Image (cartoon, rainbow, N blue to C red):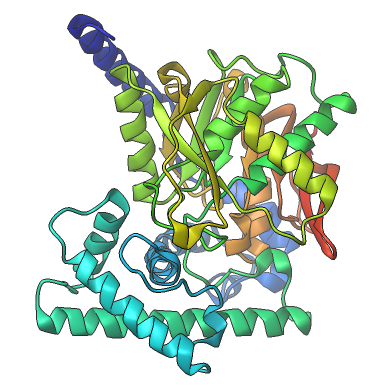
Length: 457
């Protein structure tokens, strides 16, 4: 157990490292000169605010990029609303009612309608309680910021209307996206370009990233010990995620540690010295990681619950490989811990837990930055070997994805890589060239991809 003096020294070192990181990593808006090649190449895709200038001027760009960044950050509220809807449908700690696994039936099925009403009443009663879990407290704070309090009869009535309206909105969005995909009116990689930005996360992208890293080694694209600096775009904060999530575990971030674990397992990086930066626009995500660092500086580990839900339709090879990954997760950066038991109402979820060493947690530094509109001016020795972004660029349209590709290329060292499970357009100039692609067949007719982009030398 750490002594009082070692704890004080740890906190002092943490504050010093945080200050140094903040001074060294100050995002700035993408300069017009950097964006101009993309804007010129995608003239037809420009928004009205930029089309009024022909050609686009620096003033028009500077005004638009700041207003657009503010608008995107405003979409975080919609993502929080989605999390609350997931809690309504999938939570098991506040109700004995069955979960709603098919929200698209709401409004069309009397049994689902009744179930939603009962679950909403139970959730509101729980939110009014005096002793709330971390996740439930965050949801109550979210509602209170909107002027909705479960402490009064009128507040509870308004919250119920809000919950059920959001459920109907989610149903309509799912139907809309399904129709647009079937009619090929929208790319699957831009499906959520108008949706609230959610912090949803799970382990499946982390598995495919490890598969891709292994293939990169086999192809000679990465060599042992070659990864020293990593950036993760949108690391996620998992709590009642829509992919078989629930509320019996506290909000947690797993991808930064999954990446460090994979890099160590493959011999690509030393977990004691690798530098990992997370880029996120969610204050909740950034605060969570900063709290984890502060706790680690006091000598305490970070515990993650590792949830998965094996499905009957999984391909046998995927099932074997993924479950092997799930069982090994954390063996290079921590040790097995006592898991939170899965409630009977969510019995299809499997869980194990790992405590991550404090020294590993301190290798992760959060940065409040939108990689579409903001950048870090990095010296060559500070550029990244690998940047990873999964399930994040889907919230943007083609122009913004092209801007992100060009911008990230300036922060990756020559010969370094951007890895993502979304196909980014190559219709505009960038320093990134298409590289290795990995495909993972998860179920009949369902293939997951990882796309690699290499910084040209």
